[in-house]
Image (tube, rainbow, N blue to C red; front, side, top):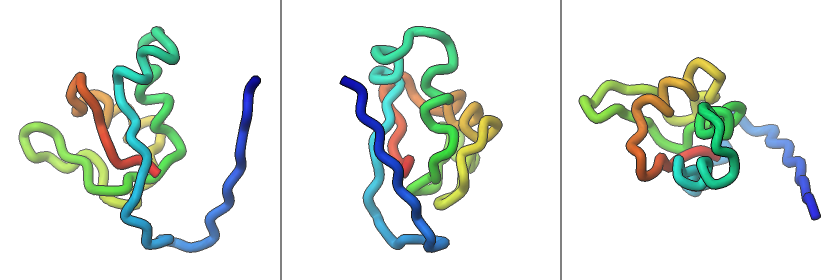
Length: 86
């Protein structure tokens, strides 16, 4: 069975501190093709500022994860996980 759910948020910032964990390992389990992790990020908002290992900011909190930004996040993310999409 496949289930889908639509949510419309009308506020600029809903104020939540919660987010969904999106992990590279889970993405690899769902779809083994290259780029699956980044594709799962596209269209979401960063729940927190995302930084690379060297401290470079990759995405700001509440920034929309476009294809370009999601590719940067995926490149900067560890093999374990990346948190903070909502």
